[in-house]
Length: 261
Ligand code: CAA
Image (cartoon, rainbow, N blue to C red; front, side, top):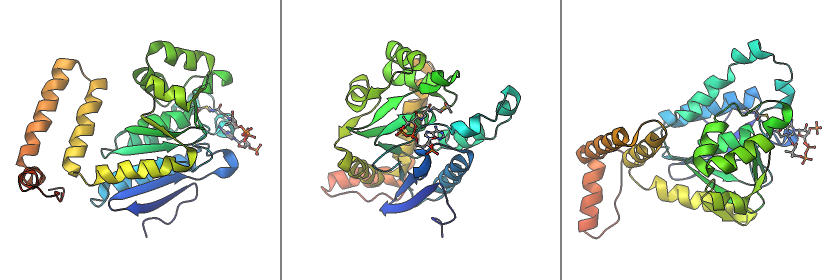
């Protein structure tokens, strides 16, 4: 059973081709301890390999997304042990996940929690969500991509305000500055994410993966190179059965059924 054997996360199939991962350490505000990250990495490895899964929703439930790295674990480290820490290998699995990922965020989304949410392709937030990178209050800085992804999401001035000042922003501001795409009442945050996930999961998975890859190239390459990369991904899709199905369905005025072939 693919959903068993987890302690700090829960996984379930909520709709056709959609996997939902729920962070589940209620006693620690879902702080991302090493075991939770290891379980996330296992869940994403399985989801990557499973052709039935076309979209993942990541949530912390309706109270809190995640309060960051587990500070009690961090307390035991020095510079040498943290350099050798296994956690970056777990983050890498999440970073390299090629299928669409949506974060549904309620409550605190802080530090490593915000960094995790920013690994998602789309963030949907409840009106009660609070986003921040409070690492500076601990005498450290974000270490799981926060300095880079936040800059890309919200621009330099707001990113610096958050990273230097530890300033938290509420959901409404997070949407205004572009960190999240949509805000909803807290009760419907997950439902809104599920609707989007179902819509995405009904598309050709080859096309959604190509789209994600192409968009993310903007972070990696200069524009001219990224445009060539986009064009190649675009061209490759013309040899897929899904492309033929999509185009024929349009011409036949029916809904397409995509197989990922
Ligand atoms: N790590 C470990 N335990 C945590 C935690 C964390 N990040 N956040 C909360 N907890 C624990 C608390 O220690 C507390 O445990 P006890 O009941 O055993 O005392 C329990 O969760 C409840 O927490 P609070 O009583 O503080 O709950 P609150 O509702 O009053 O406040 C909060 C919630 C604002 C999130 C507050 O807990 C908080 O500020 N947490 C720390 C946030 C933070 O600094 N995150 C950055 C971590 S560093 C990082 O993430 C590095 C990186 O980039 C990878």
